Length: 107
Image (tube, rainbow, N blue to C red; front, side, top):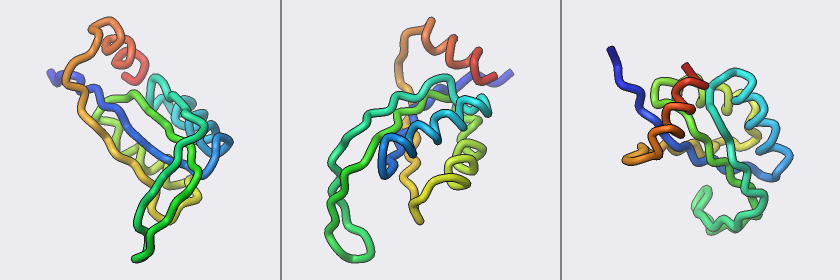
């Protein structure tokens, strides 16, 4: 029997509408239990050798590690960026009831 491994995925999008559309799709596919959309973040980064700044939205996705390949595929199928940020972080501790809810939602 495998132990459920919760992860938090961080993903930026160009605007809140895109973030909400991706969140809706991930939830409809049961690839996550919850998505928090932070409507406005200021991003600073290098892209194609040049320093850039952009107003973006941030998705904070709660899911299981086993779903990351499917989640990435779903995001890439609708994300407008050539190279979307999809970064998964392990949960080293979490409220047991919350983690159980995430597991039951995506399993």
